[in-house]
Image (cartoon, rainbow, N blue to C red):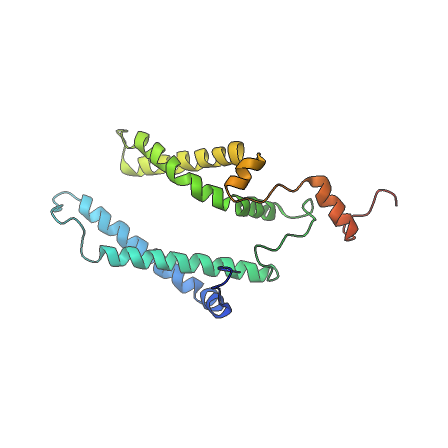
Length: 196
């Protein structure tokens, strides 16, 4: 796993892989405490005079860093398990024989930057509509997550992924054509040629 081009340190990556389960436990506990605090503020008779409960910012920071450490640790562990190949290294050309989850992981990896850039305006637009609903907060939240994910995926698939200019504008590599992929594989001896 390469966390960055120049600032990545193998010792940091190894530490993140070692502490991934502890970081996940801390992240879940801190997130649970945040949810409990928010629920306590909604309870009947709770005072809303204080804008932020004591320790709220500390819990938010702890949860954020713990989730980050857990995600990077699990990602690093998965990278090491698949043979230590960094995410920037091209995958082997045998796309047809790869398991479905690997194809999905490659699709998701290609979509990361466009998703990041598109999700914020989509969430704001969807929230502007959904917040006006007369529904319980968990229902609004679920609707916002589902609608914003579907809209972001739709925008990525229809406007970004399929066109060279938008791929370039969103920082993606040009698409690899299937026949180029197979020709490269044949020269490397992965697929037999049709002449044999």
